Length: 236
Length: 134
Image (cartoon, rainbow over all chains, first blue to last red; front, side, top):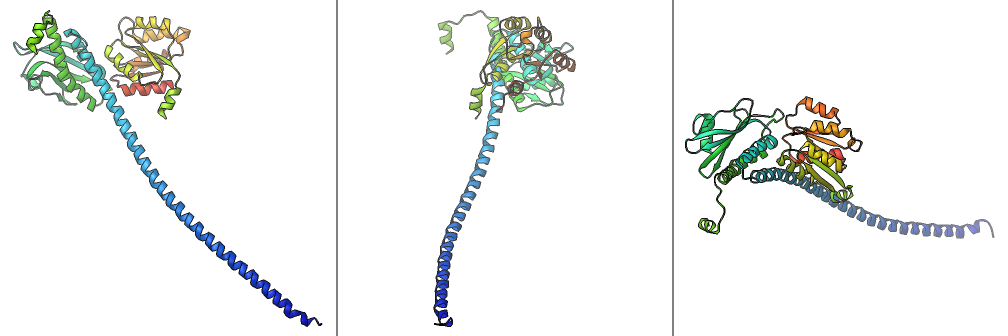
């Protein structure tokens, strides 16, 4: 047997081997294609999940911002309620007219930031507005209901707040149609820049609760009448 | 989260020295929102001196303008007592006069608040002075 006779079987074997190899490559390629397809599906799913998470995160962030704003608003409301509660509580914690007037001054100084102010009480017999307590360098003089700038505002019974006017605040103490006096602020503390919503609420509170407290304390001081069942039933 | 932090706050004791019942009530309301803080009150300097003899505080809210013994005098006396030398003191002042503020700080006040004061401002200052964070 010559050298040339051995070639065909060897070539054939080589071809077969090459064919097997090519087939295995094709199978592997097919498997890889399947894996790539599966991976692509997983990537797509992951991207969808990522987008979903992003959307959720944005939603959570928006909710967090909204909650934070809401918390701040509630905190401010709580703060305002605390001031209003303290003012009301103090106004009605005494039956002495002098103390009620002192509380009116304290509310204006400590909670609002008034510097110069006068609390006037109304003499319903002649319309005089008499200074009951002042926190001013010079003594305040009596006014007349319906006369002059302050007298007219008090007679109208509506709170007037004007930062640049003098006086800057006039709060009539009114209950129903009756005027019991007024709180007039002529100057604010230097650090008080402007009126806040809470200040407006406090002045409204002074107007109504202040009038009620003044009248209640006045009645308590003017009479020593005790509560009796007969008197109570007559008024119910 | 706030609740967890709140529970970790150590127990503290505060003294509110203020002659105005209204301001005392307002400051006490603000302090009631500080976790684990127990408050005592005094309506003037002398009353406060009695409290200071009996207790050591973690915080003192002190009004400057008070009858009998004003806040600055009380602060001066207080700082001479080793038990109260390091106690944080927040001064409350109406006029906000620079000389009062400077004197208060020179006497050892930690911080000051100028009236009109709102509960939220009190709370923020107290948190700052006591190092309480949300």
